[in-house]
Image 1 (cartoon, one colour):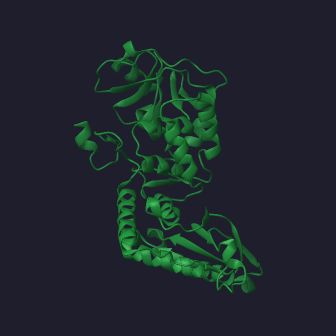
Image 2 (cartoon, rainbow, N blue to C red):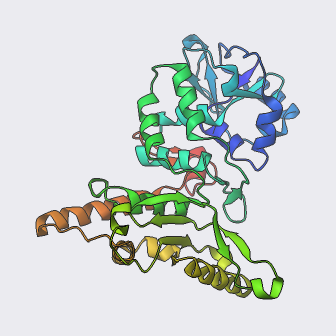
Image 3 (cartoon, one colour):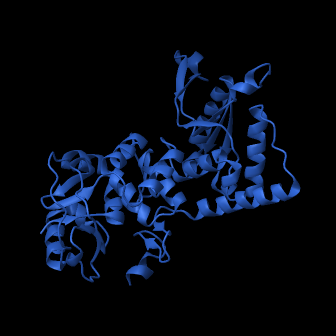
Length: 363
């Protein structure tokens, strides 16, 4: 019997450090049919013995089945019914008889359990330079290239046609930010750029980790004059503010400081980075984890960025400002609790391995 992984079991696979290789190696021109029934214990044990990847996936396994009658209660397997055939480009083979959905299809599957914000951050992750990996030292695996793109996910939706979760995923795609380097980057950029109605600051973010050519601070000594810098978040002066205005900065950057930035040698490199950006006309702000949870600090930061970009501060009546502050606080709380390991759109959250409540759900 064959097995077709789905949902969080598939997400565990594509979050692996070697997922690029698994996907490339497992692509097939023809799509095998989705199994009509879920695997039993002997089938799962046999497949684990021949597939180290499956042996590393947490149980219970989430799998696709094509027949409603092919489902039964099991503590080892959670079946998900699908009424349509999975296209060949939306799946890959991990071992003979063991299939896994593509990152694009996983995003669509997770619409069933993810809130709008959880889904948005998942899309950011799949289109970014990291994968959430609770077993890794930093809780992440870094990627040199994104697993997928907004365009690829859109093409999948176009190919499968109207289906459950498609509209929800398209909304996430319209707000997604590609090339994010970490969950804090994704959360920060959405807080900065979301409109006031959503609880954001409405600031003009142009991109994440975009290449910017700067003059090297040590160029005189090394004899090399330029260097490429990639600020985490880049905001540009609005075009209408440039006209007839003597702006002190051409742009503003926001960089998120992780733990490794506290190393003395890295701190020295960060000083060079800030100075080179300043010399290029880019004012670089830095953020730490404690700043994100401090609403007053974020309000101050947004106000300073607005000032640097030549944008006037919106004026609101007291009642409107109080309501807006409540929305900012709500967005901060909702983003703060998202960890990429719990999916809370349903009454009973779906918990993945590595979450602090994982042992409770599997005991």
